[in-house]
Length: 110
Image 1 (tube, helix red, strand yellow):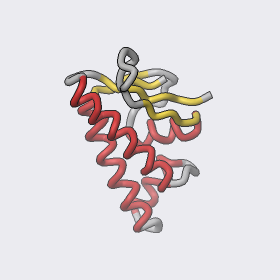
Image 2 (tube, one colour):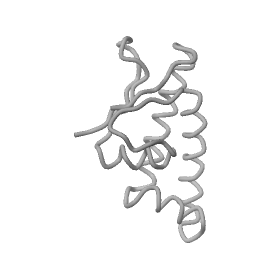
Image 3 (cartoon, helix red, strand yellow):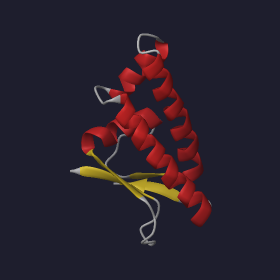
Image 4 (cartoon, one colour):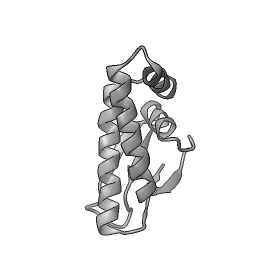
């Protein structure tokens, strides 16, 4: 069973990020969001959180033995940081899509 992060259910052109449950929970944890089976977050907030998490992944990859690396490892809990970073970039794209097509709308997961 996986988790889908969606921009909008009513738009067929809306982007979707599909991840397995393992990576979905790691992404939610890394974003500082509740690790719940379903939820939503305002797209602007997700954009900020994803941007910060991407920077954290980059710092953690560059300094795996430092504080950023330890924080990333704690949030990732065994997930590959480069894979998480790739998925975070996709989530950032979902948030951008909502900003352009549904201003003020949420990004949902479930």
